[in-house]
Image (cartoon, rainbow, N blue to C red):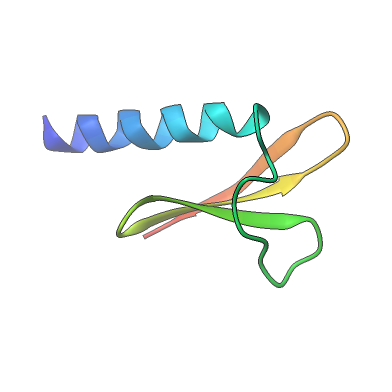
Length: 59
């Protein structure tokens, strides 16, 4: 149950990135940003012209 809740939180956070993709802090890679969705989980993503691409979820 806890794992499912964490998964749901990560998915909901990633899906909402298209609404405000520049809200979260940039990282070293060009156009890449990161969103901390839980103290131990970070979503790294690229902001394109028409798309937000999830690169990875780090633990």
